[in-house]
Length: 218
Image (tube, rainbow, N blue to C red; front, side, top):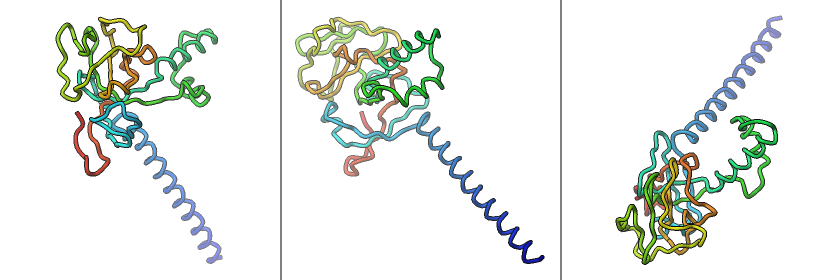
């Protein structure tokens, strides 16, 4: 009888230990998800649109909490955000709703067409809501004043005839460009256009890779 009781206690202890491990791992995953969603994230630069400030395969820490867009900031943005929201709005209309709820959008996100999947760009904020952007003689003008750009010394030209200048930035959006103007798809293109605040993941704050270039980003 004593032996049977000992075996029962062992089984109960094993069950408790497994549960504690599962609980601990679940809590750790939730905390990691919350940090990634609301505090900061690590992203990899893909391409040369921000050369020479940033280069392909640089790793950046992006801060999110309390971020307010400022002119000159380097940001990470969701380039398909506007098209994806239009898609969700169309689905809501078909279902007789004003809009899809957060949970519905989350579920629908698993079956989105490839061209609506999240795709992140790294760009620099050139102008804020209410400011007017003009491109003249290879230069950028903001509200009629020449924009000083120490990070870029080449010409800036229009890349899309359908985007007309001067252009006034709408509320809760920003006008962005890459530092490598000849190889950057940005707000000069109607495909991206003005970037809504809601499409901004956060500000690129720190480069952590390669190790030889660790430092703040500006």
